[in-house]
Length: 191
Image: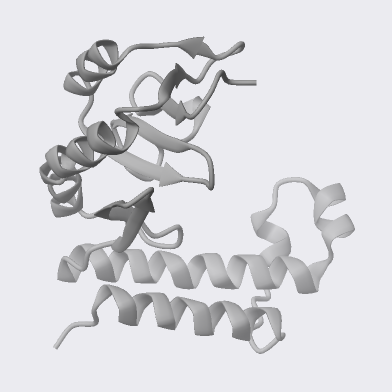
């Protein structure tokens, strides 16, 4: 029997806790950091904690791939009476190939939620400064991306338009191969 996603998250949490409590020691940590000044400033104990956990997490990632254990967790997103179940990549796990297919498959449900929940709101494309956008343009942008993510605050609904690698899409350095553009829905003019 293989571990589940929730089992792996629990194992990683326990290992992280053990690392920060000093229960794990890695003696080769100084050699792993190419900058001796930074290594000395951080200290052997802290470096040991970081590298011991990183090594353990890499073993978990190998396990995920070998046993095809998803890195996705599900959460229910609520916004003014509307709700949708959304998958998202856990921050300590990796996406296996099937995870990307799951993200793609849920795209219509997230879009339906977005369209219903944002129908009476003002839409903005995240930029500097924020740029007004209409629902038809959002729909055109949605057709060009691989999957969608949705986030909420008390006053905003955020649609993430994602492509590429799920683990990298939120980082600017990953562009243009992976990325995530944002559309924000609010009740009034964006400030």
